Length: 144
Image 1 (cartoon, rainbow, N blue to C red):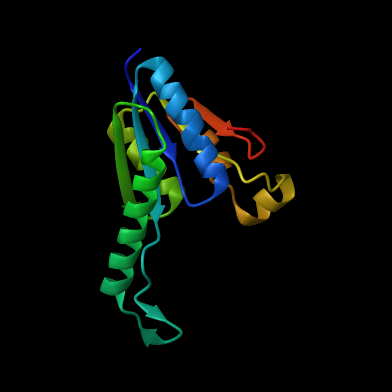
Image 2: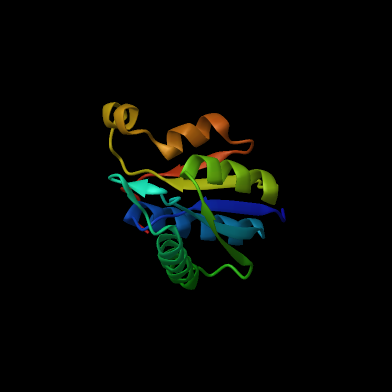
């Protein structure tokens, strides 16, 4: 099966474990791997003071590029794309899944538990409900 495996990543160990699993799945399936990082959008005003939006976005973009390159460098897949997108993780992943015509989404779980996830939100939980394709949620307890 050729296709596309999308993996949402951030700088957490759980995301790196998810990337490892996504890399293996993409290799086993002969699919392209797309690593996606959602970067925050800068506020225009912070604490009543105009915010230097351009500098913030440039720094966030550079950080996202370094993070994606680091994670991609640890992958073995021959076809890897890296996408740093602005916005919330759920919105970014939903958009990328559609644009890439993804066959599979892989995300990590921070293992917060049900109550903390309800209070704090959970990208994995939201993507289970929104994703147009199957979702693999990688436990933080997976040994990679």
